Structure formats: C-alpha cells, structure tokens
Image 1 (cartoon, rainbow, N blue to C red):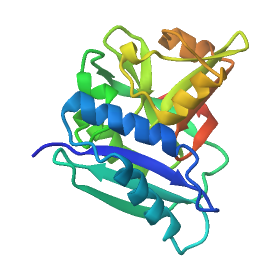
Image 2 (image 1 turned 90 degrees about the vertical axis):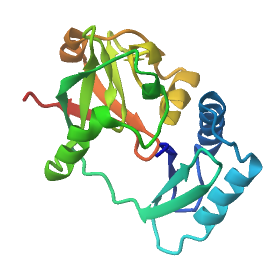
Image 3 (image 1 turned 180 degrees about the vertical axis):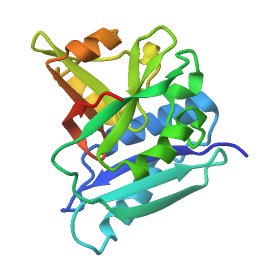
Image 4 (image 1 turned 30 degrees about the vertical axis):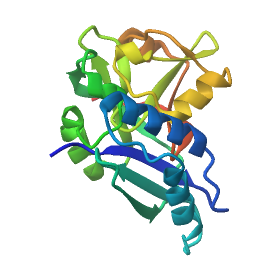
Length: 210
C-alpha cells in the first residue's frame, strides 16, 4: 500500500489557518517530487471548508491525507493547550541522513515507530530528538529543533536528515533562525533549546537526561 502524504495544520480559534500557504506549497512540492496527483486550488478549498465548518470552540488540529491518485480526506480534532513545562529526551536510535523520505511528511515513518508508541505513556516528554549516523542533530519525531548558541538561533540543515517543517520555513524566512550543522555537544552547550511544529509554533523545552 502506498503511503499517504500528510499535512498537519493549525486552525486557530477564529477559524484562520495561519500557515496555509506554506502547507500548500510543501504539499504541491511533495506531490510533484514523489509522483502524486496534485489537486491544485481544490486542496485549499477542502481545507477552508473543513476549517470554517468546525463548531467547537478553540484551536483545532486539521490533518489532511493525500493519496497518490489524488484522493484526499481530512480529520479534525480540538487542540488541547500545551502544559507550561515541556521536556525532550535524546532518542536511542540514530537516523540515516540519506533516507530520502525524511524530507517528506508521509504516513511511512518506520524510523519513528518506537518513539510514537513510547510518547503517549510519558506525557511530560513532548518529543524525542534524534542524531544521525554522523552524530549530527536532526529533529524530533514531530518537531524541528533549535539551539541558541552565542545569542543566535540555529536549526539543522535538511541534509542532516530532517523534515523541512512549515513553521521552520517561517522562522528561517523571517530571520529568526539560521541553518547550521549541530552536534550533541552543541545540544548540551545550548543557552536555550526550542522546538517548532505547525500546531504548536516555536516553544522552549528542557533536555532531560535518560
């Protein structure tokens, strides 16, 4: 069975979709790169109809799944608030930076299976962050990672083995972060650590040692 492409999208309390243009650009790029049918303007229409049809208050998570043949379906759920203190731990496995599907958000993510199964039982841990085979920092199972070093924010380049997240793209384009190869030593030396994803924005976390 072919994997589906995924876009996990924030719909805010006013039913706006702040990063919609970036989600659409990424999905179109993924479709064209991987040979999936691209739905064009109908994709945006589907998302906005689903967003405007939400009838429970507060922010929501909207998950768009796109099949190779162009079929799409959308799932929505209320987005609960994030507890004030968020922690991360280092994943025990390494990612292989040459894995091409690390660069695309799909339902085929076997390298994260153990983490995805482990996280629900450890609600105080937001994510596990991964190193690659060269010892470079990559990403979390559901987030991009950033380190503040000498007052500047850095995030790993895609070549280290990470998904080009839409919130990450926003931070890079607005000059809030820069790309740089990061190491485990950098992680321990960081003045501050943050994660980002499209649902939760850009937020500070604490590294918990195993």
